[in-house]
Image (tube, rainbow, N blue to C red):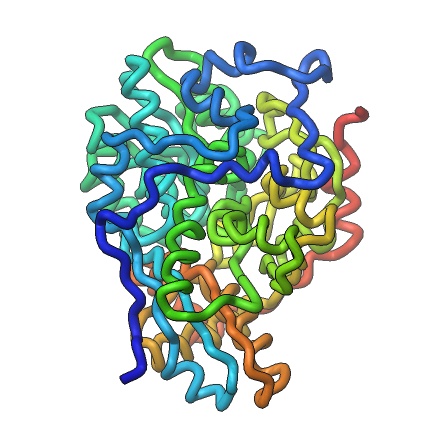
Length: 448
């Protein structure tokens, strides 16, 4: 009988995270102080991040132990299954074997919980009482709300206005875990009030929400800031995905020819891909494909440059692919893929041509998600639909070519059904972000 699910025992869950930084050819450029434009050390970021996470952010160690307290919470849903998508294969008529790593089994329904638990732990360990954060689609906010409750911390979430309106049940989930949620831009911060005055009616952006969450953390002694993607320590925590997947593919007696993941800030894709990077560097024939929306084409049309992570220019300058910190994205329904910048780690891998970036339209992504739900039974999040769409493209490029594809099922879509409603009613449209708008958004990049 064909094995459908490849499972690991609790005892087989990784006890160390893999840090990809030492293995990236030509390295990753350091973050710069936004004031002096000089490389900055961890002490400059200590007011908003705990030192335990800052040490991970700049670590040159390949392996970092996962604290037992973190492992205990992760074991609620980890190890997550790798599943052979046999019904999808049959529907496509392909000789490709398709596997997916199901991160939708976490309490928040996505991969975000992997880092949220670790971040809540390190803050708790250093005596922090409260965390502030932003969320786009609501997956990160839900994950951090769960994690902070587990470790007895308060949580304040600034949710991008367009998602705040589109996804009411994400707010319900965050409330259930005890978090406070406001729409961003909000009247709760001075920057939020300024944006509301200058850009009345704006749908908001992750860059604005980040500015508000950082201001919140910087204004209170009991509060630190938590970010759900982009930063090195987040990528580190997500490596548990790929570490498990390598063991599972070995159990299946198979190895992926292609790894695919959607890219917003880069964490779920890098989490799956990075543990396979050494194999590629040692000569293994494997392709890494990162997928983004055509309406927010950071990797495929953005500039590789130093830029701020937020609109208020409070964050360190990161060397990354960017559409400009002033970028205000269209209100597409993959809220987690609307960020203007990309992880410096993922950006460096694109620079080294180790990762292939592609972009796809949202209507085709929803069609792919519908097919996946009808074949494999799980309704995917709009973000995850981008990975599924690209998997279908690769599996049908040559129907007679036997290959093994593994993609990251980064989250389920059970709290995104309003987006599907809009798709079925014809209210969604494809959107190519115009070159002139990108030029306008990137004209204020800092001069380094």
